[in-house]
Each structure stands twice: as C-alpha cells, then as structure tokens.
Length: 637
Ligand code: COA
Ligand code: AMP
Image 1 (spheres, rainbow, N blue to C red):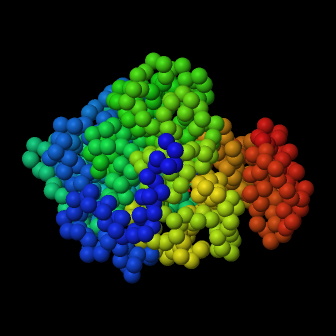
Image 2 (spheres, rainbow, N blue to C red; image 1 turned 90 degrees about the vertical axis):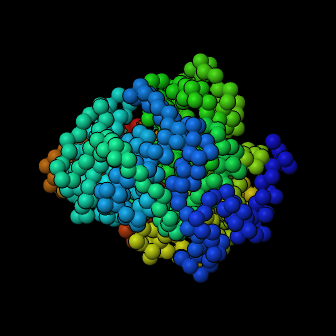
Image 3 (cartoon, rainbow, N blue to C red; image 1 turned 120 degrees about the vertical axis):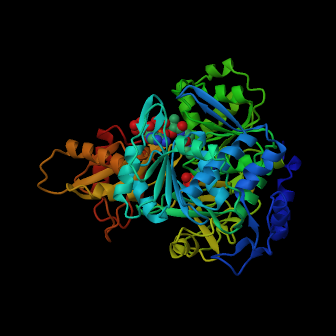
C-alpha cells in the first residue's frame, strides 16, 4: 500500500491537534468502573497524568468481559515443544483459573497495593499469576528466568514483595533448569523476605518446599477450588501501578519501570487494532518471554484486552526441534501475526538459509511479521520478506514506553518500507533529534532521540520508589523531553532511524543488559585491577559482551584461569542470559587524559569499523595494543 492509501497521516494529525480528545475516544474501548475526571491532568505526576480520577480493573477488561461474550474462545494456547505438550484455555476457563488463584493470593495475605514477584518459566500459570495480581490490585513484578539468584535478590529487595510465585524448573531446549534453588538462594541473599512462596511443581523436576514458607501451587489451588473460593475484581485507580518491571539501568541497580492500569489498557488496546492490525477473535503470537516488556504487553495484556487468542510458546526458534518450529506453531494455531526479535530470524536463517522447512507448513492465515527489541538489520528483514511474502514490520520502543513509539502502522495502512528504519512516530509521540546542547538538528543529522513531553498513556509515569532517579535519568537531560538514550536521526520524509544507545546498555539476542553491571561483577574479582565491558557485533545475537581486564600485579593464577573465573562469575551473579563468554586480559586500558576509558573507540576496533584516535587520548599506542589482542583472538572486525 502506498502512503496515499494509508490513514496514518490523517490519524497522526488528528492526535496532534487534540491529544486529549484522541485518547478520550480510545478510552471508550475500555470498561471503566468510573470514568476519568480529567483525560489529562498536566499538574499531576512528573509530567502530567492520564485518566486521573478513573477507576477500573485490568483483569476485568482482559478476562471477565470476554468470558461473558466469547467464553468458549481460546484465550491462551500454550504450545511447548520442550515438554511435547499443548493446552488451550478458553476465556471462561481463564476467568476461573485467575479468580481461583487470586483467592489463593488473598489467603496468602496479599492485598491491593502489595507487590508479588513472579519468577517463572513460559507456562500458562505465569500469565494466570500476572492476571490474578491485576484482579486484586496487587502489583506484580515478573523477573526473567535467565537471571541468577543475585539479580533476583536485588529485585526482591527493591520491590519488597509480600509473596513470590515460582515454579520448580524451567526448560531450556533439552536442559531442565531448576528454579527453586535460585529462588531459595535469592531469598537468603535478600534483606526483604516474602511471607510466602507458591511453587508450581513441574513433573520434569520436583522442588523441595520449605515448611512454613512455601506452598505447593497445584495442591493449594485445588483446595481453593474445592472450597469454591473465587476473588472478584478489585476496583483500582487508573493511576495505581499494575506492575513494576525491572530493566537494566546504567549501573548494576536495575530500574523499576512502573506501569499504571488505565493508560496502559487504553494504549495497548489502541495498538492492537491500529498498529498491529489485529481484530478480536484472531490469533496473535509474541514469541518472547513474560519476563520482558514484550511479554507483558503483547503475550499477555494486549491480545487479551483485544479479545484475541494469545500464544504462549515455550521453546526456541531453532533446536526445539528445528528451524521450522515457528512455521509449525503458525500453521497449527492459525496465527495471523507474529512478533519476535530479529535475532530469532537470524537464528532460523543460519540453520535453514533457504527456508526449506517452511514448505512443510500451510501459513495461509499468516498476515504479518513484527520485529523489535533490537535494530532490525536490513539483510534479516529482506530475508524474512522474501520467504514469508507478508509485510515485515520493524518497530522501535522500550520497556519504559510499554508500547511502540515508532513503527509502520499496518492497522492504518502501511507506509512504504525503508529497510533499516522502523518508519514513523505513532500517535502519542512527538519524536525529535537533538544535539548535545539540546537544539533540534536538521533532517538526516545524527543526535539524541527524544520524545516531547508529555509521554502518552501507557508509558512509565515514574520509577518504583525512585522519582528522583526517574527525573534524573529521563527528564532532566533535555528539559521538556523524555530522553530515550538512543541515538539516530530523522530523514527528510520523517522516517526515524535508530542506530544505537548513548549509554552502557547493550542488546544481546534482544535482551537488554548493562555493561556497567557486568563491569561491577568483573571488578569484584580479587585479581582484577581495572576493567571495561563493551558490546561487540555478533552475527546471531546482534551484540555480545566482551570484557577487557587489567590484572593486579603479583597475581598467582594465569590470565587464562582468571578469564575462566570471570566468565563463571558473570554467569553466577547476573545469569546465563548475559551471554558473557569473552574475557580478555590486557596490559592496560586506553584512556583519555582525564582517565575516562575509551570504550567507544574500543568497540569500533572490535567491530572492524573505521576509527580515529581521540584527541584527548593519553597514550595512543594502547589502542594498537587492543587491536592486536583482539586480532590474536580472531575478534577485530
Ligand atoms: N531460564 C533459564 N535460562 C535461560 C532462559 C530462561 N528463561 N532464557 C535463556 N536462558 C539461558 C540460555 O539457556 C542460554 O544459556 P547457555 O549460555 O547455557 O546456553 C543463555 O541464557 C543465553 O540465552 P539466549 O541469549 O536466549 O541464547 P540461546 O543460545 O539460548 O538462544 C536465540 C539464542 C536467538 C535462539 C534466542 O535468544 C531467541 O530465541 N531470541 C529471540 C526471541 C526473544 O526472546 N527475544 C527477547 C525479547 S523480544
Ligand atoms: P527493551 O527495553 O529491552 O525493549 O530495549 C529497548 C532498547 O532496544 C531501545 O532503547 C533500543 O536501543 C533497542 N531497540 C528496540 N527496538 C529497536 C528497533 N526496532 N531498532 C533499533 N533498536 C531497537
């Protein structure tokens, strides 16, 4: 479709002319217990507040109202090649599961406003847990299963949960990963202890339970069901937090992104029809994990708010069992739209470059592929377009925003594609590019990508109990704007090009990680004097971390032994998801005369990109040394 056929420009202009009217209209799609007194209250919150005074319940909108009208339709289809099982849960069954689990939570002492940490693999109970919290106004905080005990402990200490919901194990390909020992260790490490833990026992590995603290999920839920216990939806303020999702910040301490109820529902519901172009009753699949924002927004809440069938997939794009896994799921369940990270398609392309496995499946219902989470490289996008023959839509957003900022709005009629650009800002967002002095730059000039305040409904109002950090990290850098910490440019046609982060965040297989956090771990090793971690290009994962260490003099162990220690240490402290597999000992690190490590230049050398010696460098020879060490390891370029 050409741009003249798309309704995008008209809809964007309508939003721009009257943002409050635009969102008030979108809000009619939601069932409110009490409507807002003010669609937008500019005087409240750090940058204003959406739907002030409104009362609602997110679980009601995602589950109960569909149970009444489309009760027999599948709400969630769990597809798990790693356990060789499938399960379809109708909206009526989902209501029953969630209401019963919510009653169990209440019996555990969880009340409105209490936090509940969810540390679970990709099983339907993870979604039940999130919705059960939403039902009773408890604030969930889902922690990704690939994080180690220490990372879980940090989140427990910040969220101070009343209860933790977990499972005995996760299944990663052919491996069973016990979760319970990690949970126990995290609780030992944390200063804030939960009153109770509810543990889902998977047959692949039974966990031992601690008396007085741990409850067996299945037995407790069965007991509540037998007693006929069901919790009703508890009214909450639209502005009350629905969840806190921790994401990597520029230090080892993650940021607790707060999401409210009402604004989030309005934005997600709008995005399903107008951006993704998906209608109620259709099958929508986000191949991510409930531990990430994509999982919160597009595995659980948005598809359910839209009355779709959501796929919850426990498996990988390759190896479970092969590179045809995604095609099999699409064909088996009549998926119309798939959302995943580009890395998944790079993995499939690597295994099956001619997409031979695709020929075995009927993808007649399939309409579009959406990619986000990291830069979508044009080669991967073109490959996906070639093999699938449907629109492949790159879109850019962040944990903080909760829903897409820039994208090609399929629901409004797609605009012409420019490979490498996620296309245009969506209604709600005025995206600009600023120079270091905070001035808008001319078209096609690189700078900091910012969003003019206020942020739209659904985006974070603040960080969990860290309002000052919120203002410092996002609002004070460019007054009047939200700083995305991404760099890029906007071209003459208004297309946004997102080229990389301006901070220490890297994207590894679509997973957001802080190199600063990894440096903190390396620096804790007794043999390490100094260190620097950078993200280096990787053909599969986009980027992988690479650590440079300078050892203290007089260290007994060999550099090889220490490098091995360091790889183990990052895995132990942050988790396998960090994919930290390269540690390199160097005699010294390149620095400016004021002592700042030249990470940017090191990255260019490692990536084989053109680089120049910074004028402020202390000793230019060191950059050559770094280049030589990288070459010796087969890494430079
Ligand atoms: N629980 C426990 N461990 C986990 C985990 C979880 N939920 N998720 C990942 N891990 C482990 C992996 O097993 C792996 O461990 P290993 O070092 O022992 O092999 C490590 O963390 C790194 O995981 P990952 O980066 O996912 O690498 P992978 O080699 O297992 O798979 C891809 C690579 C590309 C197939 C995979 O990352 C993928 O499917 N990504 C695309 C979709 C996606 O999830 N995007 C995220 C947000 S949209
Ligand atoms: P997360 O909070 O995990 O969703 O990660 C957000 C970050 O991922 C963004 O700030 C970007 O750096 C990167 N990112 C996400 N989507 C894209 C995209 N489509 N193109 C480029 N970078 C992206």
